[in-house]
Image (cartoon, rainbow, N blue to C red):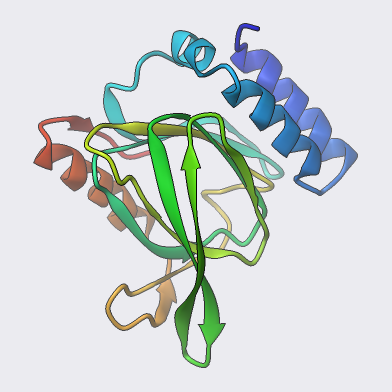
Length: 186
C-alpha cells in the first residue's frame, strides 16, 4: 500500500467530522505507519529536523515531526487528543500527572517504527529521541495545534508555564546543530 498524503488527510478529516474521538484516526495512523517505507517515499527521507505542518484547520492538525538525535522536549500538554505514529527511529515518552503546583512522573511508553499511540486531551508528556539519528513520526491532533492554549513545565522545577512555540522551534534547531543537521522550526 502506497502512502498518499492527500488521501490520508481526507480520511482523517472525515474521521474527525464523524466523531470528536481519536479512535478512528488511530486506525488510520496505524495503517499508514505499518508501511514506513511508503511514508518515506511519499514525504522524503528526513534530512531536516523540525515540526513540519502537513495540514491545519480548527478541528485537525497533521504534522510530520523529525526529532534530532538525543533531543528531549520539555514536559507539555496539547489540550486536545493526539495520535502519534512512528515511521522512522523511535521516541520515548514520559507521562506526568499534576501533583499540587508541580507535576510528577506517572509512567512511560516507548514507541518504535510501526507503533501508533493515542494520547488523551489531558496528557502531559515529555518526548525524547533516544537514538543517534533522526526519528520521525506522523502526529495527528484533534484541533489547531498551533492556536490552542497550552502549557509546558520547567524541567527543573516542574512548575507550569505558558507553552513557548518559539523556544520549542529553537530547541529543534539547537539539537540539530549539535549533530551537524539542518534544523527548522514550523
